[in-house]
Length: 225
Image (cartoon, rainbow, N blue to C red; front, side, top):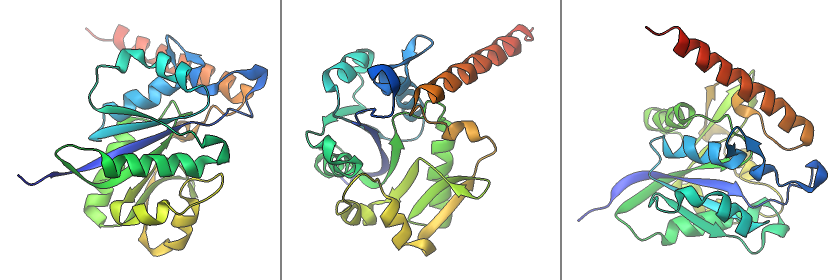
């Protein structure tokens, strides 16, 4: 039986949160009743992505415990990166290797690389990246806001080998730079999707934005008959 073509997701969640104040792990900070990382995971699970590889490192046991509600979800694999202190590239390598060795009926034709600290990423954005790749045939698809490229980024499987050679504290930035003609941008109407919870101030801003979202949802529901 032939394998079904599919897109994977790699959520980079191994960093040490070095810029976050008070020693907090940014991915474990709460937004409402869930940690920051759970919002990224939920958006990915609600999208057309076939399987999600969450790459852990710093405080890996705590991350695993925070995601205990997802332990029965067979669309999720948690992969620990023991070399996470050597930079983001090592987590990317861990994700690519996990995709290559994942034993199921799927043939992964690409992967979306997400940052675990962007809680306002939506399933709609991820699905738009996938649809744009299908429509254009471009090997790299990324969101763009006012001319500035952001995250997450979809990479074609033909770039996995090159992504596996990246070193240091970067994701696929150098690979993107090497293939300027292979990039398709998706314009974002709202910059909130690019907001990352990297510092205490950024987290406070995320709390305000999240509350505004909740108030907007409540007002919308109150208006229903």
